[in-house]
Length: 375
Image (cartoon, rainbow, N blue to C red; front, top):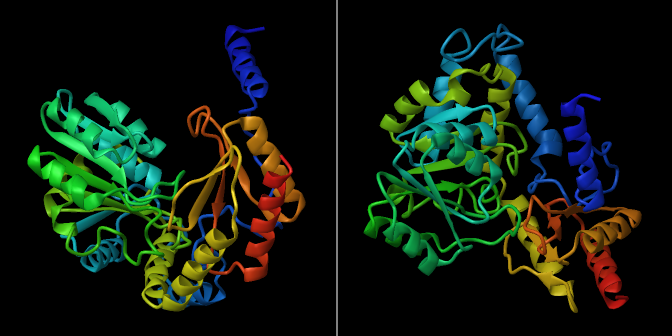
């Protein structure tokens, strides 16, 4: 057997032995408590009709974009959409990427240079970690939402310093003290970058939208969560956009989004601006869940007002057992294991939606409560 095959088998065996092995699952027919489709846009017939109407207005566009945007893949539609989204979010400019992962990879790998400093919350998304690694900048992390620890890291920063946080953390569902973090970055001359992936929708156009926006260096808005589409945009200054067009490799060397993808994003924003009823339903469902869940013993419910609700069970075996029990009851809840989260913080991650019924949420909470009581 070749050495590479031995390596692969050993790595996979280790995953099996530590209960961290990943595998693809078939499409689920269970009640959705795991997707990021917070407002139901991905399943919305109304949004689908809007997208079809937009496509019919442009009958003579290509099926594919045919190349990167620096070659043959650019269009007036793409540039106008970027201008529209930037204005909507009260920014000078924006640059669309094929995914949130591509956006973070492109931004963090190209902007910080060797000798600069990137400081991230310890729970920051993997795409930002990967981008930071490619930058060759000095990299530090601070304890989750810990201002004192962040200040200690800022004191030792060199070169241009970039601080990266999420406005809603994907594996906790909690929020950072953005205003206080901005006070620290201003004090130490650092630049704050905020990933708004999980804030869009429940919190309108994001938690930074408004008075804080002018002090934030850049924001990443993704279209694959509450907007129900695919792709992302980096928002910032005209100068930042110009820089990314020239240096962000995940933008330069990839095929551009298709017209269909861009049209979906435009129509999703149109729907978002008229989604007050869906947001109210989602908020009511979050309240109903937290009023009825009763974690105890070794189960810890993380404090969260967002659509992401997590219960930490501290072991892969226990988390997988809870998730399986919920799935057997018809509830699609997935276990979150290391290395996605740190060892000892394994959890079930529950995503609530505007379309979940009260009966579904009570079935979920009652099932979890019974399982915990039985321990």
